[in-house]
Image (cartoon, rainbow, N blue to C red; front, side):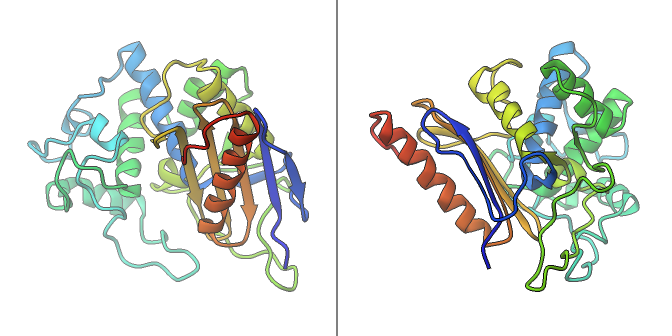
Length: 288
């Protein structure tokens, strides 16, 4: 079965839309959602609503004092919090079902006992970004979607809701099984939303990648972006979708989204496409 694929980019990237993908329909973007959350954080810092080194307990009264966790720690994955929240295991087809608002409230009250790593050392944490998103909504007094609209989409000239947890009915492009039936999706609209629950069209997301990484229209790239020897990048994966956004120092950039297939294969294909574009421009082909 051929995997629906959308590759958009510039600087030598050979664009390709194949096997039923559609760059103008909404798809899950998984952990690239973290880029939006961190960009909201940067906007709130710029206007003085919060500070990067603000202790978390000063945003959330229920958090025990003395954890040492700051908003910066949450944004750059150095909080010591585990990758996933410790909640009742959900069903196989919806692993975040147990991560409810009530569960988040309980975890925040005992956050000092949730720390499993050493603060200051990087450990990728979906749980940390869920906490960060919650802290930002409390500090700003606005729901997450309105923060994305105000601090990411509007400054880039995009309409509210063009990146959203709730795409319009009939506008979603979802992975399908062997007999063409839509595969059930995880519910990522609860507390895990700021870590991985947004949807976008590939064309819109590609425009945002250019605005944030190439043109730097909102300033330096937010703390969520991963930094390799020669690239800025982020990837994401849900049950049936995987995506990579990346910019190489030599100029090429890309957005690769696939419906189905292994996320590791999406990462590999993105890396190969980026390095091929670098090579075609006479670069040294430094690995991302």
